[in-house]
Image (cartoon, rainbow, N blue to C red; front, side, top):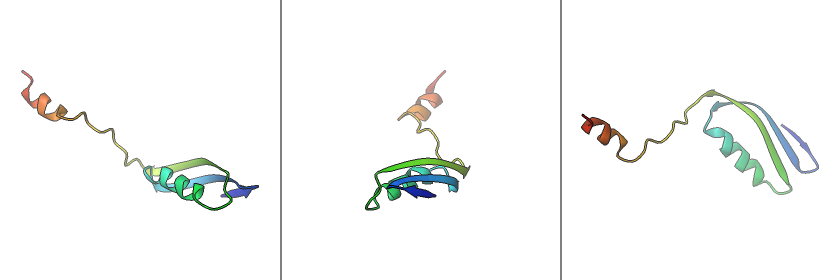
Length: 63
């Protein structure tokens, strides 16, 4: 992490992909921070696309 004139630059690796926006929001909430840029990688992609409601039910009914 680097901070210059209230601008935070995050760089590194977090365990889960879902943590990236959490880390950014936490930094944005710190007094004096005016901008946050994130170059964060992740070890595990725990974000999966949400299935369309009823999609699995329709798939089971297809003939």
